[in-house]
Amino acid sequence: MAVNLVQHLDQMNFFICVPDKLQRIVSLVPSQTEFLCDLGLEKNIVGITKFCIYPASCYQSKVRVGGTKNFSLESIRLLKPDIIIANKEENDEEQILKLKSLYPVWISDVRTLKQAEDMMCRLGEVFRRNEKAQEIIKKIQHNFSKIQPLKRPLRTAYFIWRKPYMSINHDTFIHDMMQYIGLENCFAKEKARYPQITEAMLKEAEPEVILLSSEPYPFKEKHFDEIRAVCPKARIFLVNGEMFSWYGSRLIQSPAYFQKLIKKLSE
Image 1 (cartoon, rainbow, N blue to C red):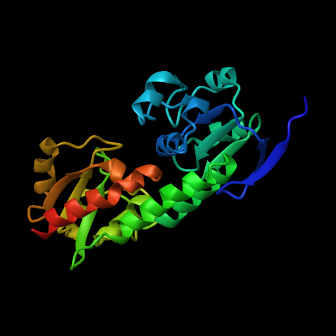
Image 2: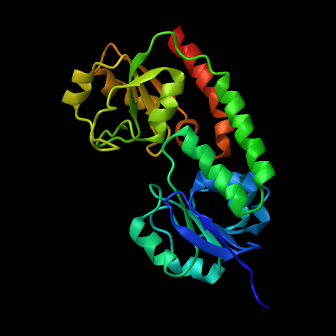
């Protein structure tokens, strides 16, 4: 029986051709896996990464093909996907190119809230879930519109890694989220998107606030002392990295979390 193919453009400006009825999905991006499930596509997802922990029902029932950087090509082959959902930053380029030679791979490139909304809109079209995608996008826009940012910008260092310490520059999704709170990114002008930060750099930056993320490195309160030794005057907080870096439907929850953080920072 002939299969009708439909052409779609991803966020890397690559066209892919997929069956008009997509039955078997492999998602290699945690935040997009959650979004696809919220679109009502959980039953069609056959493969995910070990980091695709939401929703729990999906994590528990689907084949895990590995990590976001080191997934198993053989595991994906056995799943016979109609489409693979990937991301420019989160997935390994060499592996994605191998997959693209074998399957339709839709790749996102998300560094701002607007690009996240665009990603959700496009995937809504790919999977014929336009109405549900727009419903999610409108909820996100409404919730972000209610954020009351800090009255005075606070110089802030946001750390995603330890040994070596790593932060973020202006060309990242986390940086964009910080702007909605009213946080001035100390390392916005660094050339690397995820620059390594030395003690000398941190001391020179003189941050008023230091945010230690729960992911990808699981910072804990036990790490406060080593930070205080460099920046004794800075206020240090642990933050939920999912709220700053997941760019799917979890963004519905981020504004309420940010508002609580704003309240803490204002005290």
